[in-house]
Length: 280
Image 1 (cartoon, rainbow, N blue to C red):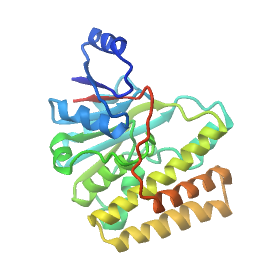
Image 2 (image 1 turned 180 degrees about the vertical axis):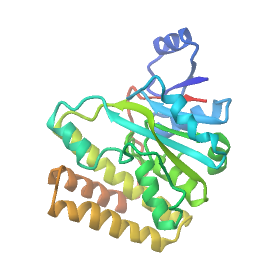
Image 3 (image 1 turned 135 degrees about the horizontal axis):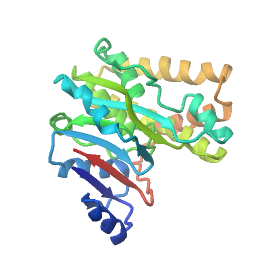
Image 4 (image 1 turned 60 degrees about the horizontal axis):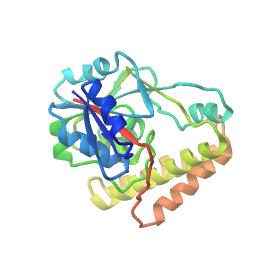
């Protein structure tokens, strides 16, 4: 079944088009993405939930490939490869090759051998992709809904990271399937690229803050991840040797991380024309 959640108030025309393709159309009053994901999951009839958004263009074999790892009953979540739909501007190239794109690569991998507390956070960061992910519904129900306090960074998202981290922490298996392909266009202009990096930093810190408060993992592991993996290796090392990402992007991510670490306000980011598709 295909469920289209319209949380952009686009109205009757979207509903008419959805009905012509026998798509289950649902309107959601809250405009943040996590609310749309939760809304679609609540009305789904089947046990495997596959998520994408209006920003993604799925390959014709996407669903078949994404569901293949679920043959193993121990697998509770799956993500797939997100390929750039275009690399035409300098900013798009910097985002793709500079550490602001999905890191899964072209190998089938899982978290079977990386279930320690510190490594599970790395796995969640590596695997989570808001435009290409699937869960068993029974796991999704037991874990609780996507957290709606985060920014609407659709690609590298704190709500997806939080869910994948919970799956790993509970000892379940996450699989990465590179043939489950979704095409997605990186932002084209410099300001949008910096905004993406900025939101990536916000998402990371809010994800760590949520983990810190929930105490699902030890606070020592969370602190180790924040200081060593994120601040030292991802930020400071790359500021010294930027590589494929310009310092402006890295500094934007650092600024977002500082904001995400020290602000307590709830993130109510309004995103016009947003939509989420769930297949079950």
